[in-house]
Each structure stands twice: as structure tokens, then as C-alpha cells.
Amino acid sequence: MKSKTVKGNWSLRTKKFGSSSVLFICIISFLSGFFGSSLFSNKPQNWQDVEFGLRPRLRFVESRNEATAYNLLSAGESGDDSITLIPFQILSWKPRALYFPKFASSEQCESIIDIAKVDLQPSILALREGETKENTEGVRTSSGMFISASEDTTGILDVIEEKIARATMIPRVHGEAFNILCYEVGQRYISHYDAFNPAEYGPQKSQRVASFLLYLSDVEEGGETMFPFENGLNMDGTYGYEDCIGLKVKPRQGDGLLFYSLFHNGTIDPTSLHGSCPVIKGVKWVATKWIRDQEQDE
Ligand SMILES: *[C@@H]1O[C@H](CO)[C@@H](O)[C@H](O)[C@H]1NC(C)=O
Image 1 (spheres, rainbow, N blue to C red):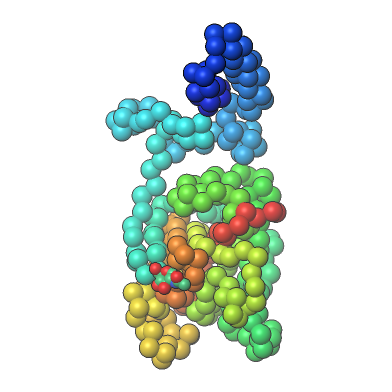
Image 2 (image 1 turned 45 degrees about the horizontal axis):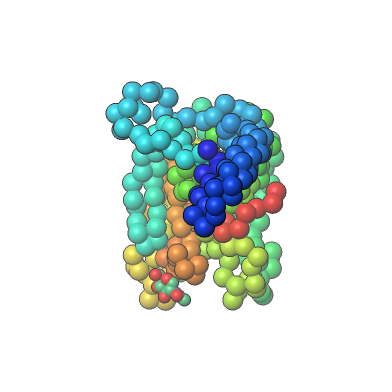
């Protein structure tokens, strides 16, 4: 199986050689196939077993019938023999923003809130030149905490993270730890970019490509994620950064929002500017996963 390429190379050469060489080559080819496959047999049957810490391979559609209905192909070694169904709505192309209704269950959301509750700290801001803690007061007033999927003993964040990797086709190793945020009445995050503009923040070792927000609670009023520059709107220089305008996404428990901060050429999409409108009634809980262009070594 794994000797396919080896055999290919050898058989090309045999044309030039005599029959004894052919025999010799056959033996070598057999041996290399033999050693090749024993080498590869050290590899676990399912690489996913390793990645998920020997947990059973995740499946998003259990039923064989569904696989038959879609008439699936046989997948590559790193692929799936099941189908993944993650419904989404395109909210915008500028920026590229996708909405994933019912991405997580309410039980999953409540558990994540319970984990985060005990550890909340006031959220901090990455500062630009000239900015201080004092003169940026009020820009980001939520509280939050960071937790990686591996630190979560319930395994819920592991499942969520895997699902995000599937939705984005960006491997999990590109994600920062989850940032679980809580916004109470009046709390907000004025408009900003998740990507770091090197002109403002200095050279970056890695850049945030995309952001995935999982809303963990319903919010009675306010707390929308807003994209004031959606489709080029409000970009005439008059936008006030605190105004809650443009495309607004209402938080609903279990729903996901994905948007891309970078174009495919790696430059920052100016329409990916976004913010969190102040909560008017209720509490907003959200789990954020920032996804980078480089693998993260956590
Ligand atoms: C990068 O891509 C965007 C979107 O296609 C385009 O508007 C922009 O001019 C490109 N920038 C560079 C430096 O290539």
C-alpha cells in the first residue's frame, strides 16, 4: 500500500536493465515495501485517536444510511468515512461572515459558562503606540478567561474545537485558547480589528486569520456583534467607533459566528471591523476562538 510510489520509481528503471537486475530490483522493491509498511504500521490506525487523546473518533453523522444516501467516496487516510453536516448561512461576503445556527447544544453552553464563571478577570486590550490602560478605559469592558480544550476536563471544548476546525478547514493547532467572555448590562467592546496591523502594533510573528464566536447565552436586548463597514457602508471616515450600526448579529445560545479578518493575500480586510454593542438587558456570554496563520505552540 505505502510502497506504491517506491514501486513506481523502480519500474521505470527496470526498462534499462537486464533480467538479473529486474530480479534484484524486485527483491529490493519487495523489501522496501515490507520495511515501508512496517514503518507505517507504527502509525496508529486512526491519527485522530492521537489528536483526540485516545477518545473515540468523532462523528457528526452517526447513521450509515446517511452515508449511503450521499454515496460517499472512499476517503484518504486523513479523511472521514462519514459525512459532516454543519448548516450555515452566509451573512456577508464583505467581510466573509458565516452564521452557524445550533452549532452547540444549550447543555454544552451552560457547562462552558459554569467552567468560566469561577475564573473571570477584567478583559485586557492589546495596546497600540500611545495607548495606555487609562486612556483606553471603556473600550473593552467585559470580563473573561482563557481555557484551552485540553484544560477542559469535561471534553466539551474538545468537541467544539474539532467542529470549528471542520467548519473552517483550518487545523486545530492554529487556534488560540478559547477566550470565554461575559458582558453585563452596559458592557461592550467598541469597534476594532482582531488582526494586528503591523503598522500599528509592530511586526507580527503570526496573524489572526479568522474568529469564531460561539454565543453561550441568549441576550434579551443589545449585545449584538456588529460589523459597521459591512459591504463598504459607513467607510467615509465619519464612523464613530462606538456607534452600533451596520450588520448586527443577535446572540442566541448555541449559535456560532465565523468571520475572516484577512483576505486570501494576507492583508487585513477593512470590512472585518467589528464590535460588541452594549448589553441593554440580560447577560451576554460568548466563547471566542481566534485562529491564526501559524500553528500555535501552547
Ligand atoms: C489583497 O486582496 C484584496 C482583496 O482581493 C485587494 O483588494 C487588495 O488590493 C490586495 N492587496 C494586495 C497588497 O495585494
